[in-house]
Image 1 (tube, one colour):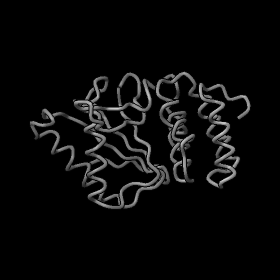
Image 2 (cartoon, helix red, strand yellow; image 1 turned 30 degrees about the horizontal axis):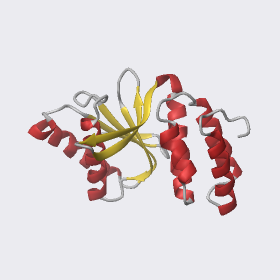
Image 3 (tube, rainbow, N blue to C red; image 1 turned 90 degrees about the vertical axis):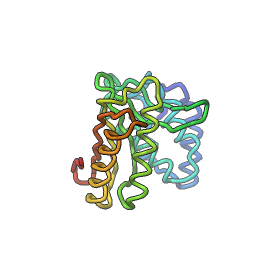
Image 4 (cartoon, rainbow, N blue to C red; image 1 turned 30 degrees about the vertical axis):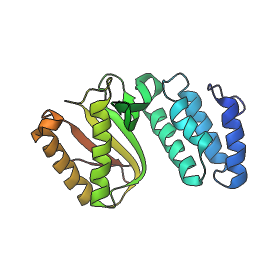
Amino acid sequence: MLDLEINRADEFRTAAARNLDRGNADTDDIEKFATHADNLEGVDGLNSGPVDDFIQAGDSGNVRGALDEVRRADEIGAANIERMNLEAYDRKERVGELDIQVKESGKIVESKGSFGYDEQQVRSQFNKKLSAMEEHDSVAFDGNTLEVRANKIGDDDIVASQITQMEKDISEMDEWNHANVDIKVVDESSDKIITG
């Protein structure tokens, strides 16, 4: 942590001490975050996304979420990431934020702690992220992939059925320009990949 070379290293160190003192993070969490963030130095959106989330964290869940996001980005590799923390706007109104955009394919990777416990919530999350993809100028929508990575998936059947329904809706609706979008969800607890 003392050798961390990200742009907001001093702010991170202050936040790390505060989160440690409040019990929001332990030294292992802080070291892991610093290592992953250091490996990602230079990736556009790192500091405004997960580093800012860690600095602003008010509880252990927010610390954990920021740590999961930098870990997943580090697994993808800095050289393979186009950008992190992509903010999408429609007529100056914020539509949403996308966690990671992969180079070459343009695939969007979303980081979640848990996912797939409620049908309406799954559909809402897919809709929100797909809307952000569709609205963001630098993200291809038609022919692209939305990948959600979660520590734990609640109900595989709910997730699979919502993927099938969302992909069908997108391909049939004028609003989505009849786009062909692939959605997949990765359950990291079992390495299972769920598709429609």
